Image (cartoon, rainbow, N blue to C red; front, side):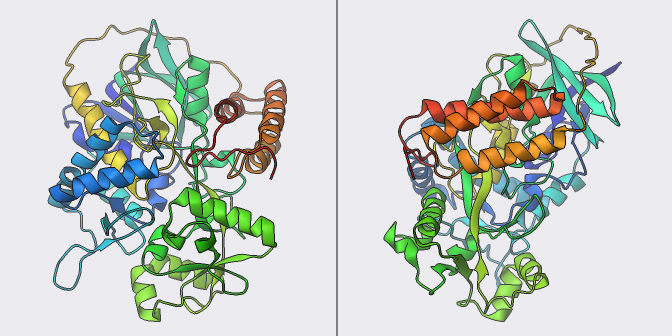
Length: 482
């Protein structure tokens, strides 16, 4: 029998930072579905937002609350901002290097809806990749790769472990505490920026287990994505580009965003995404991201990965503009958790990072607050676990014998992606949502594998959440007809 002090599901920033905070004498296992780099943290480009100093905390809080359209938990936002400098200083103390000027000063950039430059970055446009590698290097605990969690072992309101599908065999692994840090749900959508294996399994499993999912309808679509590729994961073009001068224009070079918001390219993501969507629908024109304000040298230095990738596709950047579209980017809602990351209805179970809903982002996440949230609430989860040095009765469970996948499931997954993109994306209608619900329910009634069932259950929660919210707010825009 396998028995640990803590099991962590997921190896992104939240899971790895939690692991780093757990003492070496604790028996810890990190479970990740695929290779370690296939997580959203690895692909995060823009940076980490933080209050630059004590004086900036009120402003960072204000920006976060305003972006959240009145639906943020103010206490959660206070915790996020007031702990931001501490966690970033801790990373720097441990040896992490953010980008600096020639005289050694930290370089801050600005992104949409921030009132000042307060976002740190690393490797130009590779912040997530650099942090992920840094945390992996310092991970002192065991890792189980290429393994998928397919069950939570819960009895009488207590979580005792997980079932993993490991090389097509299911087995139970037990622990005193379980931390879910499995990420978002990008693979539910036809166009998304997420790692390919981010597929909403755990959220659907929570539905099966009766664990509350919260504000699932709050989904953020990134406005600037290059979607003309055959890959499931589309190419994100970081908001920092616009923060430093890139512009959005139509076929005629007109910067039309000012028709929708006086801040133009620096309006919040929900506003920019909706503006692009509506303008394209109204005019039939393609929309572009233009970089001609950057010199060749600066663009290649500040955004090296974007530069290389776009040039590899044949674009002569920064002189040539690139066609863009919004795409799904971030799940604001998730597993309901409290301010110590505990799942209220199940003892010894925690949720952190994008998979969780602390309500810190409200109805719209402020740019670059996501990596920060992973750091701050991972630490709080570990502090809560270490504060409870209590014994736990070992309860054994039978291993599930459910069929995980069937040969027809792949086609149905692609059908689900189209349903979600067409009916449950940037602009929603009651009729479209009801149509999506009917199609999802029909798929759930077919002969399908458990993993597809999890995806469908997550999708249904999103649709039900959207149908229950009659008024548009933040990223949730609903209208009768477009």
